[in-house]
Structure formats: structure tokens, C-alpha cells
Image (cartoon, rainbow, N blue to C red; front, side, top):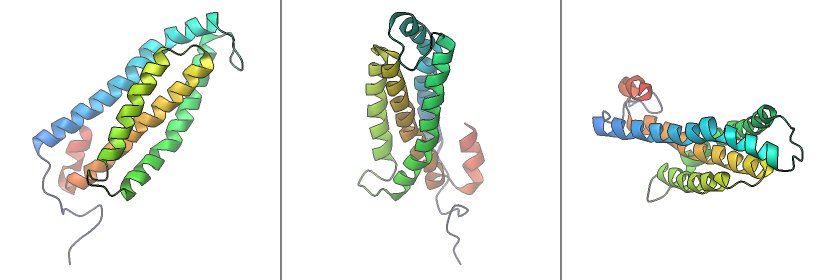
Length: 161
């Protein structure tokens, strides 16, 4: 009887070029997320805190950073399984994963530009929520592609990169 499901070895071994491309894609996603999120957002929040009306934000740049990060994190937490489930059910001529990763890439690019021009803390919050959700539109299908293309015997190696 042929094994099926996530424990089956129905796919051929992952080629080095596929593993390399997957690693580059993960590197690109992490640079895209970490650069603006860890380096650029803090001075932007400081400037917006000092120069714009606060609304529901505070006079503390640290608290404002925490508010934006927390709200965006909640959206990221919810969107990750959503994008994974949608990519599992997608059938297209480009495959199950590629349309979602492409959509995420376009949205990330647009929202990164929007976040750079955010004129207020609420605008930055909205753009950062969109960035987090869009990045997960890339990450969830990319992670799901591993069992699609990699046999069980190689999954630890591929996931470790």
C-alpha cells in the first residue's frame, strides 16, 4: 500500500538549486521585515510622536512603538494560518503557492513605500499591519512548499537553512 500524506516520500529529493532559492527567498523576507521594523521604524515613530497629533497614542515613543508592534503582531498571528489555508486550497495554472507569494510581494512593496511616507502614527500603524499581513502572505505558502517539494528524509536539512 502506498503511503500518502505528510509522511509520504512521494516527491523526489530536493535539488540544491531549489534549497538555495528557498534560502534566498527567506533571507529576502527577513531583510524586508527586519530592516524597516527594527532599524527604520523607531526613528520614524520618534519623529511622528514629537511632531504630529497623537490621537490614541501617547507622548512616549517607546509606548507608541509597542502599540504598533503589538497590533501588527496580532494581525500577523491571525493572518499566518489564513494564508496557509488559502494556499492549500488554491488551484491555478501557476500552482497553489505562487499566486499568494506574488500577491504578498506586491502588497509588501506598496505598503513599505506607504509606511515610509506615513504622515501620522495611525497611518504608520495601518501600513505596518498591512506589511505584517502581506509578509505572511509570502511566508505561509513558502513554508507550505517544503512538504510539497521535499521528501521526509530531507525536510530537516531544508528547514534548517
